[in-house]
Image (cartoon, rainbow, N blue to C red; front, side, top):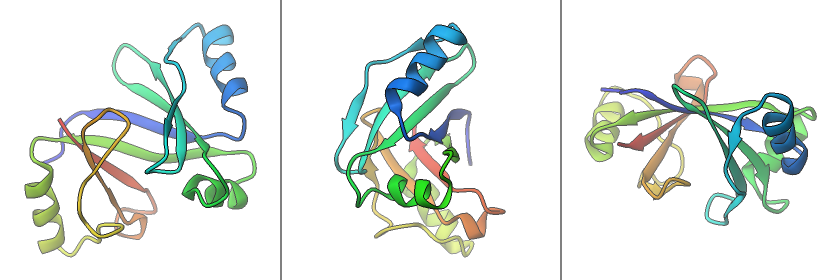
Length: 134
């Protein structure tokens, strides 16, 4: 069901600092910051030859990333994102198998302009998983 790894997301307190680190120290290509108000974050994508790193900074105190940073003050790995061919079919298969979909289980448009869903980390060995329609 899952396809290729789309990205690994890292929560950061200072997006400018993290972006400079990836760009200037590691020599990576990074995107411009993109505010995602529906998700409560501002994101920057670091392009790698085989995948992307998504740097996430909270967009306001109500952001789920702000809550994550409260628990993890230094930031860190937030989620991994896998591609699926059909997000609704994937959702239905997961629900039938007992997996919990976060929110109302309806796909929302993610930072790449494609439908996404998040799976409860307790169902996946403590890892928050994002599914993105390919």
